[in-house]
Length: 339
Image 1 (spheres, one colour):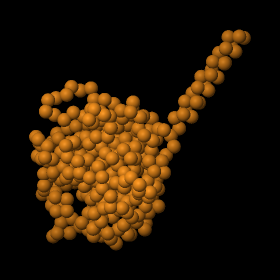
Image 2 (cartoon, helix red, strand yellow; image 1 turned 135 degrees about the vertical axis):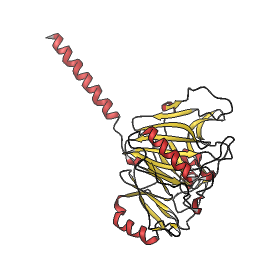
Image 3 (tube, one colour; image 1 turned 90 degrees about the vertical axis):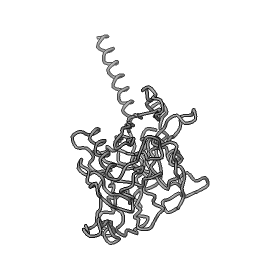
Image 4 (cartoon, helix red, strand yellow; image 1 turned 120 degrees about the horizontal axis):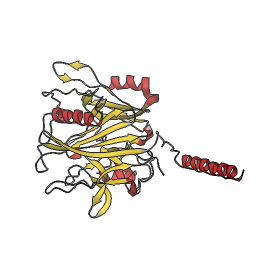
């Protein structure tokens, strides 16, 4: 009898411990209708790069982050005589995919919003909102021809057919709104009336809208022709490029390429960058690749921020082209739910 009582007591203790652990790991979603942010990522959850440093090559000191709510891995590859880095991100809830304006970093600013025209370093915005990983946005303060809808709030609709629109819904899924095709003058992206009609029909489920483009990859395959011409984005220029991509439900990829300002790199045309995004998507998701890859503001604005060693201090660093750092108006980022 005593052994049975001891066994029963031990079983109760194990069950109580299991319930306690489960209670501790309940993850509460973040608000999806304001600029609040998650807890600070824990330094011990970052994964150091153990690969040997190669002379004359930039070294990424930390290549991952892992906790109960988010997984991030950083990779580096090369295509078209140009280096590019990409972050593979898996999250637990759509609210972890967030956006933030530069005014989040402005001291003394009581009510930061996407209506302000502030600019600052991407790593400072990332630090202000406790981002696990972040990428530059679409330079929303250039309002001419732009649509801005962030964190569930409509800011402006100045669409005039020059830019493509990435729409992220409240499930974290990507889609895009394109206009009609005009064979004589090239692609015609959404006009104000096109976006207004979409907004009126879908606003309850809209979460973020980024206005730049074009769509680079859809259903695993590049949709950009080698002769694609779009002067608004300098499509034929060899430059730095940035893209945000969806690989699957709550699974994403951030891509940033180098430019010719960095030794040994020529930069990518939009066609070459689309090819690189397709290859990176296939590397991470061999079966389906990128469901949708969307081009964001590029050139010197291209900024992938992650924590690493900077001036002998562990802090937010620019992973791509760290020697070139332009001020940004906004970022797209991923947050942890672990407090």
